[in-house]
Image (tube, rainbow, N blue to C red):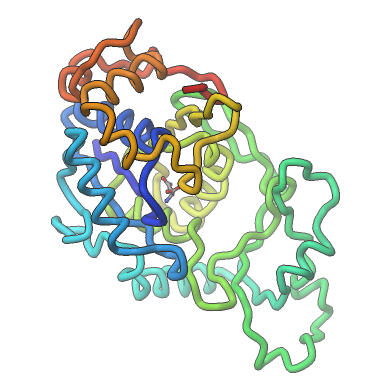
Length: 309
Ligand code: GLU
């Protein structure tokens, strides 16, 4: 089996990022698999190579060694930085476009906000289908040929079902969940959903472990796997970590970032704390990642929506 950790190098990692990395690493090591480190630097404004190097340094310090990938692209499935994989995404996009299931979208963010379906209270935007060719009735926006356009994918109005290793049976209708979604943005940037599927498929990833904020987006990814005729990996989402005020940890909030944690604790203390929080050991004790791997079982991982640390 092959697992992976796919951080976006947009800041120093926090305890929640480390938790997802740790669980993925433990699962791989306990099954004798291979662990890939992929740098998801699709967003040119926010991604920085120095953050990617820092992530590598933090993982190595914690004892979470990878077998393939990283900034230096070790292995046969590289490059492992998404910013260097544009040609691969282009080719796959052309394949998807040839199915007739995509269309150009000229909407600005303001258009989308003004026409979004009204019911989403969690901040999710459901695309209304405003630029679907049948909605436009063959009428291009004024100067349509010159306007920057995104590429959107039609989604089917049916339930997509999958079983998450931690959260169990899931059923998502993409038409209600997100509507037709973007594969390539108007500024040419590749969408996460396309890149993640192409990379996981081409890198032979069989198990995806990540934070539960991405649980439902797995349905978008499964739909893309279907279109590309590929077998989706097994998905395992882990609870998000929250601070004492109940707020989800973020890279902007530095209180539990690796910078401060490394100054105050040893790797064994951090791993032991995460293992106790996540249900991997009954109570806190300092422990190395490799000793935890001997006792790893998915059954012990907490399936609460969030964990307070
Ligand atoms: N790059 C994403 C992040 O850092 C993770 C994507 C994934 O694991 O599929 O949040």
